[in-house]
Length: 637
Image 1: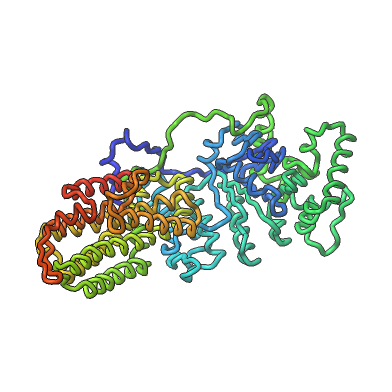
Image 2: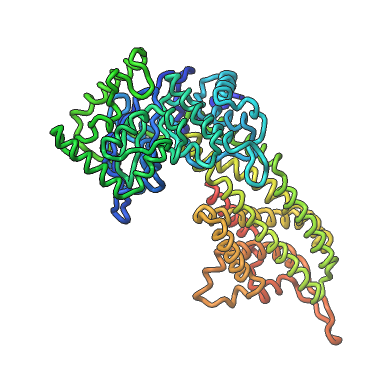
């Protein structure tokens, strides 16, 4: 890729200068007394959940739907929450703010948000080009993409498009692994996944978890994941398990100790029964939960522990070891295990002097958001993807152009060579307004493109790919030119000469200028609505109603000089007012209406008609052009 960064002033774009090498060691994460309360109802979603994920382990967070699993991992990943978050997070022995956590954590959401028209290779490469350091050579980035794709077993489908509901692509399990690959490209010390097996068949789920366990065993990444109902073999792949019930900890420890833990509390798992299923049964049964909690309190009293220290009970503590010194399936003689134990000690000691506090109230170090790449690199990479999408999904582009040509021929045939008689004048004015109406309502198609890509944009922006500006510029470029400018030119060129409008080069060019500006303005207006409304249906309805009201105050259906004083201001919000007034001034002001009615001949200057019939100003053309241009600039930036 061409190095454009030298063209951009470093004072304008803050670039994080990172070394070529990526992190090669997993990080340890401990969380204590994590709580979350939604401010609107003040009901805690999760309460005082503690645990730890030593470096290079797989911690599975389990629980029934609504237990608080996703809320917990969102907090651990440093994602912003609307409510109040409390508790402490310790990363490698240090108390950190959520903004610092986001720098070392890779997060894979429950839903696979992927570009449908790109191949697996292109999707992972997109992440590499924007998230790996600017100083890293492009060849090394390509090598890293190959490493990750091979690691996750995606080599066989790397050149296949991802696809979506309407276009066939890779399987659900492969999509899940692509989402993981996109996050692994930066080799994060900690990888957090929300329901990575959701919607997958048992084989695909096993493959995904197996790859994650291999990743953790390599000691390069610590894995924390939520999972709803794993089958038995998947359950015992995990190093540690945290089971949550109604926002509270039900079990915390190795999967191999879960059955004994429950048995000590008079909750015996039936023979030939999946212990993971039984844990969920307990988590959903009020009586079982109460029995477990009463037993836990009784055990803590016998040991002389207060309620606040119950998290340190054997079998309910992630740092608890089996008698032989092992944890889960790891060997006590493993040198890596020794380092993990030492890390655990450091974690425990490092927090003794910390006072309880809210994560949300911790003071981050003040700094601007930094990106690994410069603005022009971001713009170039995003534009390449938009261009690929436009070329591979031609349906909307072809439809816009075909419809514009067809309607241009239809309008030209309907108003063919309209004379400057009374009837001909009506046809000319009607044709101008009808063209604006067609362009205005066709601009509603911008809603679909925006809402389809909104989720992908939000995900990529929150993960530090790029700021909004390069994405918006690229989106506008590949939406405006092919879908707004070209169709308007096709419609205007065909209909202009068929209708017989003024045969002057200046008039023709000014006519096309207004059509293009108007089409862009209405598309921008629809994008503004789409940005403020999440539902595509609501946005479409709001845009349609807004278009109708703008048409009403556009000057064709009502004389602008006769609008009631209390409603006069509305006309200045109408794109149709600026568009139709400009087209009418450009065309009709140059001509005269000549006709004979019942033997009475008359010759009326077009300028007089504009002033009396429509209430237009003859000097309004360039004023309207400036208004439309300013509107577009304001919306874009």
